[in-house]
Length: 399
Image (cartoon, rainbow, N blue to C red; front, top):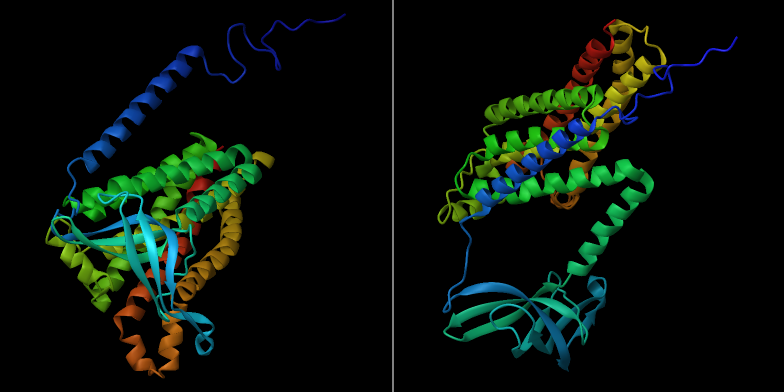
C-alpha cells in the first residue's frame, strides 16, 4: 500500500506561500520599514550638513586648493642630489592652466621648488594640486601644492571593493555596503554635528551603536547570531572606553595634549566645536573595528557548535567560545600593538637616534597618548571574548 503526502509534509509548502516563509504582506512591510529608515537617515544627513560652518575665502583674501595642468616646462633648473638618495634640488618654471575654482581657465607661470621635504616631480601634461592665494580684488598667486592623486585613490578603493566582492561573494558585497554606511555616518554626520557644537562623544557613541547593528545585519540579516555579536561587541567597546577614561584621568591626558590641538583650538574660534572629548571619540572608533571581528568570530563558532550538537549546554558552549576567543585575543591584541608601532615608527626612530632617556620618553605626551590608544583597544578585545562567549552560550545553550 502506498501513502500520498497531503502537502503539509517536509519538502512541500502550502499554496501561495513562498519557500522562504515570508508572505507578500511581510515583504511589503519590510520594504516600507526600509524606506522609512532610509528617509530618516537622509533627513539626519541633511540636518547635519545644513548651514554647517565652513571656511570660505573672500574676494580679497584667503587660500584655495584647486586642480591645474602643466601645459609646458618653461625652464628646468633642477639638479639631482646623490647625497640624499637622489632627490631633486633647485626649481622648475612651469606654465600651468587652472582647471577648477574661481580662476578656472587662467594660465599662469608657477615656480615649482624642490627640497628634501618638498619634491613634487611633474612633467608636461600632468595634473597637479595647486594653491591659489588671493591678495586683492582679482589678484592672486599660485604655487604647486602636491601631486594630483584622486584617480589613484579611486583606483585603490575600487580594487578593494572588487576583491571584496569577488572573494567574499554576496557577503563581501554586503560588507562593502556596511563599510560605505559607516564612512557616510562618520564623515557626513559626526564631523558636521561636532562642528555645530553637538557633543562629539554622544554622537560617536550613538553612531557606533548604529553602525555596529547595521554592519552585522547587512552581513547575516536579523538573526540570533547577529544580535549576539552586536551586543557583545558593544560591551567590548564600552569596556575599552571605560579603561581609556580611567587612564586619561590618571595620566592627565586630554585632546589638548595632542599634536592637532593648536589647529583644533583655531577652529573653535569660528565654529561651536568642543575639543575636550575628541581623544576619547577616536579611541572608540578605532576600537570598534577590531572588536566586531572578534565578536562575530566567536558567535559564529558557538552557533556552528550548537548546530552540529544541539545537546551542548551553556557550560560547554561557553568553554568552547572561550577557547576560540583566546586564540583570537592573542593575534588581535598583537595587531593593535603592531599597528601602533607601524604608525609611530618614524617618530620612534627619531627618538631612538637622539638617545632620549627612558624617563624622559615615558613622560612625553606622545607616549602617554599612544599607550592609552593601544591598550584601550586591546582591553576592548580582551573583554569582548568572555562577554560574547557568555552571551552566545546563554542564548544557544537553552534547552
